[in-house]
Length: 114
Length: 108
Image (cartoon, rainbow over all chains, first blue to last red; front, side, top):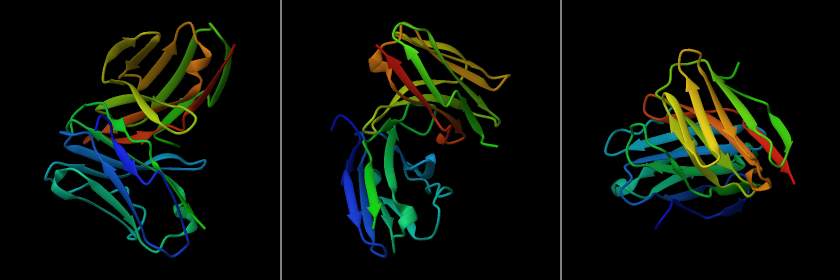
């Protein structure tokens, strides 16, 4: 596709359930980022993938959060045993590589934990 | 203190006015990004710069590395420029640290 695609666009789930969020980056982009935008908190970095290198997981808030990137393309962010404080918009971005390049953002997944 | 500080937090102006949004940061960076977020959430990258000045249409971004400061200017502002403008700095491998954003409203 022409841009970064995220699915679902909205997800409502009950506290304690697991959720999976998907990101399909721009074709050929080797760098992929996950960010979170909580109400009143601004944007924060979660995790970064670059090519075949080990991901930078330094922004993941707890061990309930994990992400993988299969085949260097599609990425899945998984949140286990969701809590209400996980409610946020989860944004994915990709760039051509891990050097100084603009990042292209998807429209995000709005996650609501009841 | 946040690593990235933006000012003002909110700005309301009349159509046609010259707009300036400021960003200061406290850490070493490899690049600085200006992003635009419209109501509904989509984020668009406006500029990425590591020195000097860049211009795109009515938008101008400048950065002073020594002073750790960047500005985003909008000339001849228009109501469609109303959005949240976010400054973000890249450290090392391009993971971004974000400012809190500036909510800009341009009235006709």
